[in-house]
Length: 138
Image 1 (cartoon, rainbow, N blue to C red):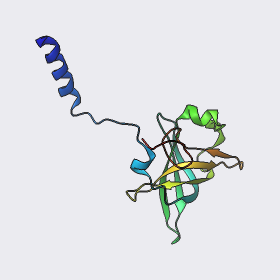
Image 2: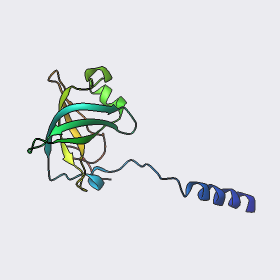
Image 3: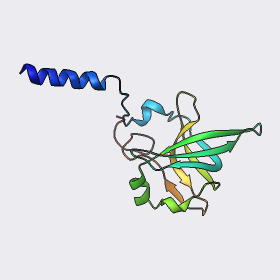
Image 4: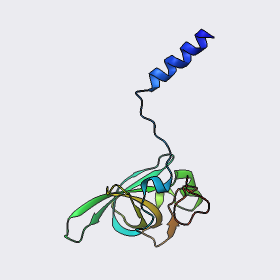
């Protein structure tokens, strides 16, 4: 019994300094009251789980370029919706409709993405409790 307790204690101690990356509820990070539209040139794509990220340069009202991070669903979910890796390339202009981060950073929850060919696809993470989802926020 003491050996098992020692193993558990050692495991907790080893992981205490390691940050956890957790899937979050929409309402924890994004402002559902403020829909925004961003149009910009694609500068980077990360096809990762549980979210994909699209980085776009958006020209601000003052003419300055502002880099934005667009959080979307997992690669498999996007693929099932018709959004394939080859549909966009760096430099392409895309339109992202979504909701900004509550903390004021240039992060947006990409609910809808308009591709260069005009197709409009859902970029949302399924089941995150965001606008258009049924059920309660997690």
